[in-house]
Length: 490
Image 1 (tube, rainbow, N blue to C red):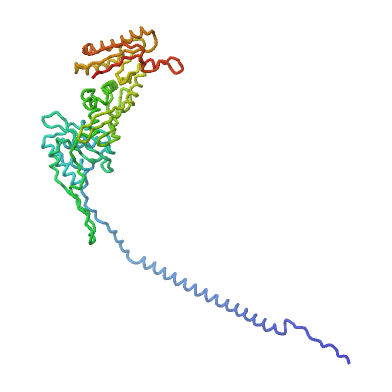
Image 2 (spheres, rainbow, N blue to C red):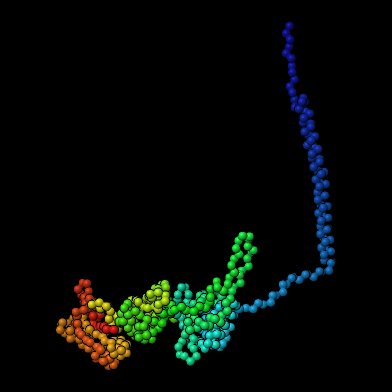
């Protein structure tokens, strides 16, 4: 017997095991929506209530503030001004000479207190001592000279040196205090060192020994030495007494004699064995002819400063020639106890500058030349084929004549020269004529003929080539050879 197949019904989403799950999810969603709708309204109501309360409180506070009486603001604390401190004298000097001249003015009026402050840069203790020293000098008879006599000597060891002139009552001799100045932010210039001449040394005794107060320091530890107090002996004195003329002052005196054309006084500074007399006299001639004076800003500069050797550069200027030039002075001494002597003069710069001014006139003018036979001589120059003296030569001969007349025992030799143009016999006669022209002019100036010897050498000893290297004529070289040389047998 055949059994029919069993029929199994299919599972529906509406029945079976999925229906309970769907019912639970639907219930949760419905409850969440209902909670959100009712709770949101309550939260918003609470926020509105808080905002209204805050606004009400703020309004009440503003109302109370406007109704309350205004309280005056408390004035700020003002610190009472301190009593003014006594200010030091206001000194301000643009140039070193301004300080020196103000010092002379104060001393001339007897204002020793101000002079002391000027000398000591207003340092109280040093100022009092300086004032006593100046007062002592006045009691000794020293009076300051005119303020225009305050001089700028030059530069040494990064300091600018000036001198204050003093005259002893009843004497015409001038003595000088040397002041070494340095730059200062407050005063412009101030005194770093003052050197008195030996004649004023007794005035130093009027300055009491002073000691600078020792700086406060922490107590020393056991077993250590306390710092030594600063005493007068350890302080660097402002005023000292010279132990001999220094190189700068020595060179300054020498140059000033030259500028005054005082050959004899200048010669006393020179070692004749090292510096030819022709060189020194030639420098005097250059100074007189060029009307040179010391450069007021930097007249002398010490470039080498050793106890026994020094080099000084003298800077000079000429308004007539519109030139600024210089020359070197070499000084030596055996030891510091001996006086200085000038053993060298470097004249290359000043002679070169001087010669350029003469070249414009067509006649060379180098008063000192190297002689072809050796040594140096003084030179006078002539026009082409002429034996008459040039006006420049007349000035040179005035200086030489004054020197010859001062000592009749002195003699000089004059040698005439020509260039190579012309016959030998003619040039010999022309060179002799040039030498005789010099001798005649010296006689006019008062030099006896017995002191002068002449000769003519023609073209035999040229100073410069008469022709260029290519064989063509050299007019400038020939102009150097038309000359008369003077040899001083001193």
